[in-house]
Image (cartoon, rainbow, N blue to C red):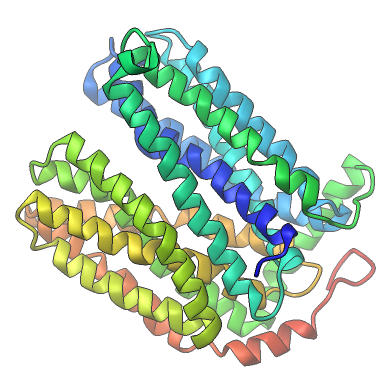
Amino acid sequence: MFKRPAIAWALYDWADSAFATTVMAGFFPVFFKQYWASDLPVTESSFWLGMANGLAGLLVVILAPLLGTLADCMGGHKRWLILFALLGILSTALLPLAAQGHWPLAAVFYMVAVVGFSGSNVFYDSLLPKVAEGASLERVSSLGYSLGYLGGGLLFAVQVLMVSQPGLFGLTDATAAVKVAFFTTALWWFLFSIPLVLWVREEGGRPIAWRSDLTLAVQRLGRTLRHVRALPETFLFLVAYWFYIDGVDTIIRMAVDFGLSLGFGSGDLMMALLITQFVGFPAALLFGYLGERWGAKRGIGLAILAYLLIAVWGSRIEVVGEFYLLAVAVGMVQGGVQALSRSLFARLVPPGCEGEFFGFYNMLGKFAVVLGPVLMGLVAHLSGDTRLSILSVTLLFLIGGLLLLRVDVVRGEGRVRGFGVDNGDGF
């Protein structure tokens, strides 16, 4: 059903999703406040944690388009993926070496790991058209996200058990267990990256001539900014994506804070995160087949409609059981909308420009965590009602969905076939 290069490519999602689940969403925020920065006031530790996330995100936003363009100029997307993956893996493995109270060192390791993780994903996404084409784009993209949910969820489940019952694993306490969790995440990431290194083939890139290549990359980046307007369907999709993925990421990032504000315990919220991971595995695969049969645009539209209902439902939940059901609902569409967005965008990218265009795509994904949380915070502050704040996210889905309706995918695919890279230095 899937060719070996496609499976090897998808396994990288299995590999690095462990970092997203265990480190970014799971243990690092809690461990930072309760261990590394335990001697700081709560408000100050929150500030530095936010700064670490913000600075790492800003670096990725700045670097992503330039790195993608540089890889297109000189070839070898895979070698850039390997470089950034190793950067993230090494930094994650170093986290346990930061002693209690050494929060600046932990923050630096974390920021470098996030840059490695996000940078590698620029090149990972740009390799999709090299391992799949035509109708298989949706299935292969969805396979990646589904394996990411399954792999990240399996490892996280073991790590949660290890932290709650450290004696079962021969560990002295929960602190030691969290440190082991960080190291095993790095090891997991490394081991399951090997299939991509061995089996994903790409035309070899030439040696780096830093000054000329960087100059050429900046020139092509400027041309990309100008010429993307000559691809109206691609441009319109990117705008639509920015809005609806902002809503998706807002729900992902604010769900724990929202649950805490409703009085649910941290254990309940960890369980909800695990539910989302395991439901996301088969659901992402299902969306891949739906996208192949119905078209990616219709599949994304279905997911946006589901998110609208989720946001309305979330504003009305009363008990933790409903929160679990909400986690199931999110898991059913979260991977699907991400996978189909990636495969649809791959159809709207000019041949030979995958790196730079996916650099912009990933940059928008990082910018997409700005508007939604600010909107939620502002509505909560002005209204004094936390429930009303999550209802405000429906605005992002409505705008994104309406813009998506105007994207003519067939016309867009025809337009990008008329664009190409001329002599390696322009369209």
